[in-house]
Structures are given as structure tokens and as C-alpha cells.
Image (cartoon, rainbow, N blue to C red):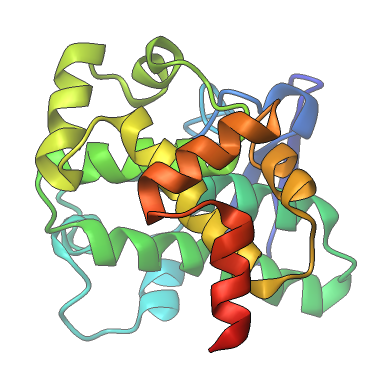
Length: 240
């Protein structure tokens, strides 16, 4: 097995292949797949941050025997497909980090790993009925929020999501009403407003924490968005 891959055996019927942090930077997807019949793993990491291989019996125990799991998981449970891909990059990154840093051992560790696989599947249930436009737009949003101060370029995001940049921007605009980086600029300013109201940091620190190199540039952008500079905005809120 490659040196950048960790193999975790989680009791009977569940194995997890985890890409180690130094090799995980652009591997922002996870996959849950049924174990192959001879017990060998069908995948060994590849382009995924995490691959969970689960037997049909273990999957049914994890998800319960009722209906309403979502179309992708219903096909997986019924044998109609062999794998489910989770493309929520922020969630995948967090789950992978949680698994690599957990202090649990023994049975507690096994339960913790299973809970993290279920967490990935819960996200799949919540997004299985979304359109391609929504799935891709939310994937872009999650990637941007992973590092909102120094986000990857649209070309890099396009490679991560697997959609051409022009089409990806059009899908994002259809869902959010603006381009991806217009949305990110607005998100930063809304976050700045919350920090200004909170009052726990100086205007300079808030500006720098959100990626602005110069306070006047930040102040001008804040004024355009909220109608007054951050110092006046903070003073007005303190008077309320």
C-alpha cells in the first residue's frame, strides 16, 4: 500500500482507506463503496481523501432497514450500484482530519470511525435530490469556504469539481445570483460586519483576517456594502 495511505480496519464489514494529510490537498472527495465479494478492497485511495468499503450487511445496520435513505443510497443498498461519491469538499476535509487526529482507541475508535462514515452518508441523503447546478454550486461554495482568505483559482476549482470553468460559473450564478468570487467577496463583508458588531477585534485586524492588505480598501468595500464605514457602523450599533 502506498506510503501516503492509511488503512483502518473497523470491525467486521467496514474498512477505511484514508489519504494522509500531506497528500490530501486536492483530494476533496470521499467514496463509500460495497466491499467486493472476495474481501479485497476495490479501491486504494486514488483521487479520494477517504474511501470507506462496507459490506451490504454492515451498511444496512448503519443505515437501518427502512426506506427514505435517498435515491443513491437506495441503489447502493439494493445492489443497483457499487459506490456513492461524496463531493462536499469542506465536509470531506473535516471528516478526514477528524479521523486522522482522533484520540480514541479500541471499541470507542471503531464507533467513532463508523459515525464519521455515517456523517458522510447523511450529507449524501440531504443532497441526492439536488440538481447538477445545485450540487456543483454548493461544491464550489464549500471549496471557497475551506480557505476564504486565499482560495484556489476558478481553474483549480474547475479541476476539483470536474466541470469546465465557464459552465461552473454559470451554474453558480443560477443558484446564488452572482459569480463565485462575487459571492466570496460578499461573504467576507458580511463576516466583517459580524466581527465589527462583535467588537472583539480592531478594524485593522478584521481587515487583515479577511484578506485585505490595506484598511482603506477594506473600509471602502465595507461602505459600499453597508452604507457607512466600519467605524461608524460599529458606533451606531453600540448606541442601539
